[in-house]
Length: 361
Image (cartoon, rainbow, N blue to C red):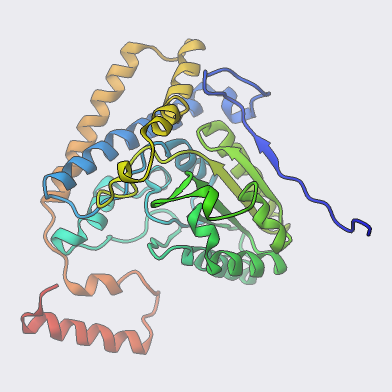
């Protein structure tokens, strides 16, 4: 028997858990202002996330999915994208969304839908699709990328799915069509080791999630998802490849879910706390903050000032959210299509009649 094909999965890391540089930094990371911009948004995301959980616990927000521990992966994705690229996230990618112009108020309105009948207010930069059904966003991203290619536009799409989502058929179908048509898209799986209560080791037999790209005939790479420099760098490489007509890439960003899956979950029922405490030592804000302090561009006074500023911004967003009137039922139709299909027009009319008859929102 002879070997007819061999594959490998490369791994990328620039800054280790101790804040030490372990490889030659890419050009953007040699600019302190670029690093500080990412760090500030990672910190804002962390402060916002903490506040959102508190709002849910006090009955002012619906069920909420925390992004604790994912800040480097999400901000790195957003920082690598161009303004007119299309982002098809899952539900907890707040760092990427904030980078691209979605406001904290928008995010709160989305999660506030359970309690207050609100809907997300629409797109920010480029095109935006907010998707909750697991892995369907990969197909949405592939469709957007096909449109970009047919129009001859220098644009890309990016989808994000969790480790559990890579076991879904939509994920493979999207990669397959994107691979064969060389579509300008990047598939990202943020591997946080848990698909709600299902650990990675009992949901897949693969050594990495990146190698699932092999079946689609596209490159698969793994990156330290707690290293914002590495995530941004690998995403910039993948997006440049897609934009030049070479097709998609699957990026596996390895991190850890430090929170419950959502505020409706209790991870202590299925996860050993020792594992969580060990993961906290690797979390993303610690290493980039240490690196910035070691290089002399950051100190404790600046850190305290940043935290105070973030708190003010978050509180302002919360006040705006709480002061927003409940949206009419028609809102859910406003950002689905440029021109609403006839069938949707009928549904809109039915929904408005139902609301007008006292059916509510």
